[in-house]
Image (cartoon, rainbow, N blue to C red):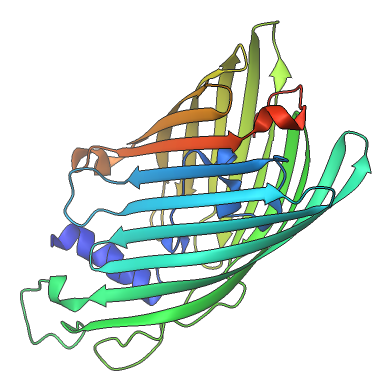
Length: 315
């Protein structure tokens, strides 16, 4: 494993890189269940999203993430249920998890709902010490043994929405669970830190054939820089989405910011399915060492035509 990728990964385990403790998705607006439990059931039908993300392409040990999330509204109730499976590998660190979500929504007026949701999860974390290669094999700061743990956790969120607008606020890692993975000194200091999210978006019609959808996401973790992202997509005939985004955060202990340019394409097909692709380009020196980040999304809404919804869903 290259030293350049090893150092940030080890910082991740010790909590010094808390902003990166969970993967971020560029196509978050169709995958809000990943960060906000209150999103469950808001699409009114059985909906699912499968995403695969390959980060820092070309670097040894670069993070890869796969996520499958499904959710639905129970018929004739105000209840939404969700289930998510995910797998995240970053060098010697692997996380595989399962989460279940319950949400309850309230009708504010004929066009607006507010939903409250909670998620319980169980993650299996493993550290393959044998994959860590260091110059001094007797360095006590590193362990070459393998270790693993099962870690419970919980998330909470609120989500206000109608057909052309949404606002969301959520908090993940409520329990701040300890990883219970031994480091080289035999301690158990590593743990999850609470992540705070705010998301928003709306759709504005430009013509009969074209609409514009700006969205925003802000993420905060204690003692880490605020991460903000602004995106704008043009929507053609309610089927084809094309846009750009900018993700930015302040650098740790140095001046300046780290900026990422995001390109987004999405297509709805066969009425009930959509496919999306995004590419992250790093506007800093790291772009010299990696080929960016690729993300592919497949989404579906089972039997949407049976719900008699006339308006397309933009979120």
